[in-house]
Image 1 (cartoon, rainbow, N blue to C red):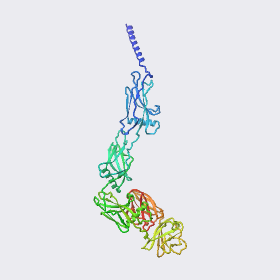
Image 2: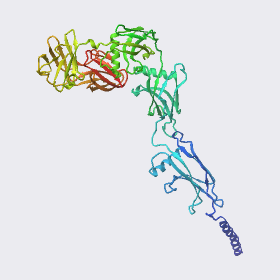
Image 3: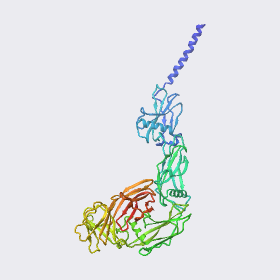
Image 4: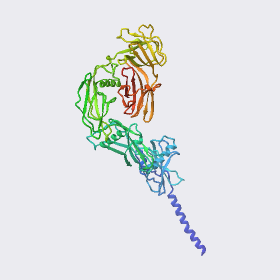
Length: 607
């Protein structure tokens, strides 16, 4: 009985083995008949966004591969640089088993893998063209079947550190319209900053005037995540007026800088964008000049100016002038802190001031400060008060000024010699002072060769001496009968005073080196001046950078008692007091000291 049972068991097993063998024959994988996945096309290009790291960058989809039977398939999404043929540096973006036919890749994940492959190929960071395919397998023992290849261009972002915002360029200039205070005057737009994965930047909109300390900047607004900010006309105008007041700068066309500061929190360090700049013309409450004459004869008449009263507490006025059509580029401030609403400009001063402006613009054609001609001159009045300290200019008025020449009334001795071809070209001069009966002046020239004194309207025209100038100071007798000319001077800079009665020349050796010395933005300024001359004039000149409010004077390298200060010269300069000149705006300045005049003067030109 036991044997029968065992036999039956064996018979029962045999059919089972037969069935399994039949199934295996049916399910055999045939690589030649299997169909690969079909990967769907994607966009031509993508820019990955550091500010949307968790969002989907690309969604890949495909038609499932057909293996000939219901097999367990793994689909790998592969990525490689175009043209590299999916070699050993390819990247597998995802590996999905089962029936899935799509995958979404985030900006962060895709960025990391793109940077990985760029590094593997030692490529520069930036846009890269990549290829993708699906590799489908059922086991390690079988070969993968490969889908079609698709491609796109991807621009990754640098994820190794934080990145500042980037401001979009703005217009080069804006004129604010006081008739539309609520209208949008200017809009700032910027590319987002990167302050860390999944962190929203906090932005601060910063505004400042050119050349000023960042610690005095104006923080206009604080925003979270937003990437634009718009100013109304009134808002922007008030901000500019405030900054002009803070820095004690003049009202007018103003260069304004904007930056965006970004951080992940109010306590984190701020990332500053590159600044964008523009010129903005603000508006203000100005006065109006009334009853100005159309023309005036300066040989006989002063110029009377009157204007409407300004608004505010303790209103004061500055009066400015410039040649017509020059937009007050080299303006002269001819009066400051005037308390009334009238001012009389003296004709003698105005006659000279016009000449100084012609020098400043290199439009002097006579070589003298005064001349007989007509010049159109513009005047404006700038009002300011205790509660509005920024001086707002009025509309300019134009007055034609008939000038007269004073130079012909001054008696001179000319220094002639080898240096000016014995008078055929312009020579240095000594000017008459009736009070002391002397002809005096400073001379500066590298005299090489002999020289003498010449005065055409004296009967004995030539005056000479034969001895050398001994020491740094002294007196020497001149004579009309001296045969020899005066010998060469040993140094270039002297003060001469020739007495017309005794015919004696007093001399004093001056410094051979003169410099601009001053203070600008808390730093000392020392800039040497150099001798210059043309067919009409001799002067010392230098060019120097100075910040708004800088002060200066001219100093010799030897005797500081001979410093040239505002109380000793005339010119188109501004002054802080009698001992220091001043500039009201930051800039590069050329300073020219016309020393060889009866009334020496200084011309300051803003370049």
